[in-house]
Image (cartoon, rainbow, N blue to C red; front, side, top):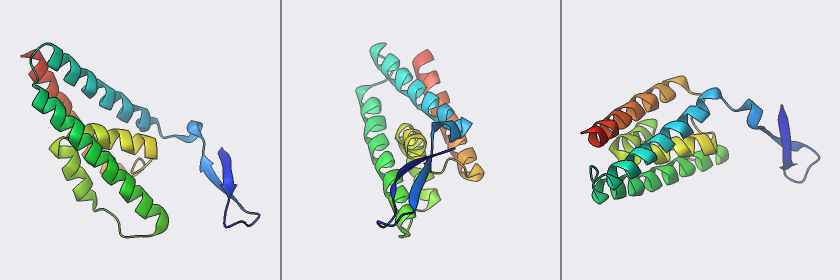
Length: 137
């Protein structure tokens, strides 16, 4: 199903966007994973097992990464030059995974490309595992 969101070029044609019921199932998993990582960072910091430097690095890289996904989504909509997928994955890998996962889910960007999703899932699993190890030590 679709929801009408406005007119295209002032003509009588309507622009449409899928409503929330059309959202791929794995989008919710991205948000859940990002929230779990935030909770692990907060809990690890509260327990003294994760430094403020690590928390700050995840926050800064998350903002940078989410912004880069937004730029890429905007470029995709307007037919401009795109951000390379390997660059998006590199940002995710370098600590921006929380922002990357949130941006993918909120912007509905790169959510239906299976190869991209698989690489993102691997990067997410690596970060999740590392955070669990840091908090559990």
